[in-house]
Structure formats: C-alpha cells, structure tokens
Amino acid sequence: MPKTLVSAVRQVACRAPEAIALEWRAVRWTYRDLMDATDRVSGVLTAAGLEPCGRVALLLRNSPQYVAAYYGVMAAGAVAVPLNAQERAPVLARQIEHSGASVLIGDPAHPEWASLRGAVAERVAVVELTLCEDAGALDRLAADLAAARLAVAADVAPPAPADLAAIIYTSGTTGRPKGVMLSAENLLANAEAIASYLRLTPDDRGLCVLPFHFSYGNSVLNSHLLAGARLVLDDNLAYPHLTLRRIGEAGITGFAGVPSTFALLLGRCNLQEFDLRSLRYLTQAGGAMPLALIERLRSELPWAELFVMYGQTEATARITYLPPERLPDKAGSVGLPVPGVEIQIRSATGPVAAGEVGEVHVRGPNVMLGYWRDPEATAAALRDGWLATGDLGRLDDEGFLYLEGRLVDMIKVGAYRVSPLEVEEALATLPGVQEVAVVGIADPLLGQAVKAVIVPRPDAALDVRQVKAHCRAQLASYKVPKEVELVSELPRTASGKVQRFQLA
Amino acid sequence: MQQVCERIRDYILENYLFTNDTSALGLDDSLLEQGIVDSTGMLEIILFLEEELGVKVQDDEMIPENLDSVNRLARFVASRLKAA
Image (cartoon, rainbow over all chains, first blue to last red; front, side, top):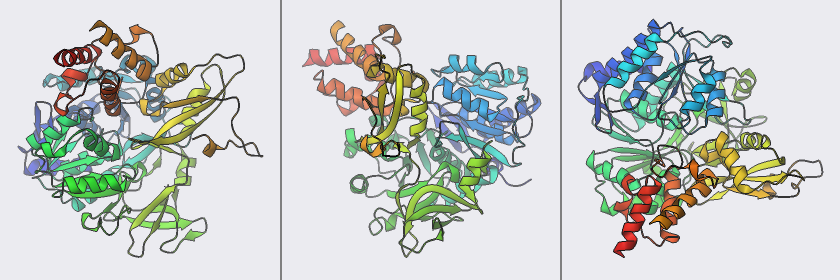
C-alpha cells in the first residue's frame, strides 16, 4: 500500500498512542483515540456499501469529530468533500450535487441544516453528527451510517482519479461550483513540506482558529498530526481576548493566521497583558499582510518567529514561505518554494527573466489533480505539468517571490477569494434588478469588501436593505455586499464593456 | 433596559439580517452559533456599543457571556450604564 496522509498519521499513533492529538473544549483525544475513531468511521462507511472513490460531504465545524470523519472517509478509500460552513443552503446544495456525494455528514446545529437537508435528502444519505463533548456522538453516527443505504448517485461523474482523496470547493471565476481535486499524495507531500520548514515536533502545540474546510486550516491540521504534535481547536476569533489567554494557558507554541486574524488580535488587545512566551512561531498566509502589521507583530512578540507564506487550494495549500531570518531584508516577499516545489514566472510566450513580472506557475507534488468534472477549467490551469496560479509575480535574483496582483478578477475579502460573477449571478435573480456590476472596495480590516452597483428596472422599488437581504439568503456573509449603490446606468467603454474601475 | 435592548436588536437586524422583521432574531439566539455575525461582526458590535451607546468595552469583558445574544448585550450595557 502506498503511504498516505492517514497511514502516516497512523505510524505516529503507533509510536506514541497516548500522546494528545486533539484538544477541543474539555475533550482530549489521544492519537489512539483519533485512530480508533477514524477506523470506526472508515469501517462503517465500507460496511454500508460506500464505493471506492465515493464522495462524502462534510458540514462540520472544527472538532475532533470532524477529523475522525475526514480521516475516516479517506481511510475507506473514499473522497472527503469538506464544505464551507459559512455558505448558505443553496450554494451547499449545488456543491453536494456537483460532487455527486452519496453521503452528507453534518452538524444538525448548523443554521442552514434544515434547509440543506430538505434540498438534498432525496439523492443523498444524510447523517447527523452532533458536535458535543460526550463520547456518544460517534456511536450515534456509526449507528446512523450503518442504517443508511449508500446508494451510488445516479449521475456519477467520469471515473475519479485512483488516488483522489478530497475535493475542496473554491471560488471560481464563474458562479459554477469549482472543486479542487487533491490526491492522497498531494495532502501528504504538502503536510510533510510544511512540518519540515516549521520544524514541527511532538513537543509542539498548535492553536488552529482557521476552519478546516479552508486549505490553510486543513494544512495546519495535517502538518501537526503528521509531526505527532498536539492541535488545540477553535474555529473563530470572535473573542480575541479569550484566544490570547488560551495561548498562555495551553502552552501554545504555534499560531496560524490570515492578515485579519492578526489585525483583530492587535486591534483590540494589549498583547503585553498576556503570557505569550510559549509561542515559538507564527504563520501568516491568505493574502498580503500590511508591512506595518508585520512590524508590530515582530516588535510585540520578538521571541516568536514569523513565517510569511503564500499558497492556494489548487496547490493543496502551501507554495512558498519566507524564512523568518530573511524577513528584514526581503520585506514584501512571500519567500522561496517549499521543499519539493518549483516556481517559474511566465509570460504568454514562455518563462521570463528574473525581475520581470509574469504569471506564477508551480510544479511539484502539491499541485492538484484538476477540477472535479471540469476538464476545460483543468486544461486552463494545468499546462504541461505546471499549475498556472492566476497570480502575477516576479522572482528576484536569489529566487524570492514577490506577488504583484492577480490576472483574474477576484475580490479578496479577508483570506477568501470572492468571484464578482458569483455575486452578480445571485443579484440577477432579485426581481427589480436590471443590471448589476460587483467590484472590490478597500476595507480597513479585511483588505477588501464587496460593493454592488445596481441599475434597477424603471418600475422597481428596490432598496439597499432588500438587496443585502437577498444576498444573505444565498451567499456566505463575507460575500454579501457591504456597500450597495443604485444608479441609473453603468459606466461603459465605447465597445459596451462595463468599466469596473470606475465603480469602486 | 427595554430601550437598550431594542436599539441593540434593531442594529443587528438592520446590519446583519437586513430586515426590520423582529421575528427574525430571538433575543436569546447565539449570534455566533446562528451564523448571524462572524469575528469581524463581533468587533463591529463592540464599536456600536462604544460609539452609539457610550459603553467602553474592556478587553476582559469581550466574552460570550456579555456579547453573544441581544439579551446578553442588553444586560451588559445596562450594568455598565448603571455602574457609571
């Protein structure tokens, strides 16, 4: 059997079965507990008739149960489809349908659960997994899965690649679901590379506030378990004060964040009032962090190494990292490729010289298998073994990468990519909207926010609140326009193309 | 207290649920668990308490017991206004 992420974690569990793997609320799971739960989910899925490469959608917040379900699905030779818990039922239902999942495992406390269940229950076996601290939740899941008939979805897609392990839905350039296919090798190789440059050991204790459906959160999970470290779970930063206190109380050595994570922590709290001496390192990815914020972090926590990093879901998670000791002389760079990965900057005619700007291309064991059921998008992204990232960048003469924007029109809200087209398509279904254009505007905390500019139908009585409420019913809250402007016409070029730059 | 409670409820309805239908938000609904606000929304609510209701929120007061529902927010604000 080839080595996989789950088999590698199993080896860790064999070496130190009593070490704590996961800590969540009052629950502590040892590596033995984690593997037992993983095997239980895997065994019951197989017994219930899940075919190899069958898809299992997961709608669960960060919790030990999520990890058991996620690893259990992969251990069964099936494909995990972790869904974004911030999305609304219509989007989640479309993704489940597109994935051809035969099972949905979800938390009944999710605010969209009832609507989602209603929307997919005819085609998919829906099984609830209550995220609670009592150990009975997995017993109930096992019983419910055993009772479920895991029918193969009627519209099963073309055969899945043999080592397909996960499909992660990401914002595409259109509103259509775009599922990044990751192989077992992708997950293992990227987690190994990250554990290596962060020098993770069994003595490390990471705190993860990033959701696991998000490739960055997923990489934090996998790299820590691969290293035999302990991971303390949360999934938000609504109470920064409590997060900081927890770092001291739990002896956290590593903390991963996106720019808004650090902005929230530094914005409201005086770090000097907390005991943060246990922190060995911080990692930052998910978009460029302002240099002033980087400087503040370094001066407030001088003992903690800060790793500035770059990646995308299509590359499993991580593409580059900036060695912390180079932060002073390479300010603004996202660093060097992670072990095993190569970068090339290309123009339309081929590779460009050092210093010249072009599209960032990536090659290595982290590059996805393609987009699920989307050969056209796959062919556009994967060319002769290289992943075209859609990001513009340049390499300096030492090979350090500097990002220079994106080729494709995307709004970056916090660490999330938002496709203007997806929001426009949602708005186009609102009666009274004649035309709409969506653009990104500057936001002090999140970098960018969404703005919608709408031309109402002449006889329509649209108001801003109604527009936002319509979006909220269909889209994750970070995609809902923060600003809505009603206008009589959109600015256009002579050829009729909307001039988006005039709308921001 | 009643008035404070209504102002907080109306602020959340208007800015996060985009409606004036008061039945859309239970006074004890968890703002976070129900997906009504996220981390940045919570920060905006704190700014609303400070700027519109005149209550300075200390670091150690930013806890779910004070902030995670309309009733909790209203009780917290009322206790701070009373103490002032």
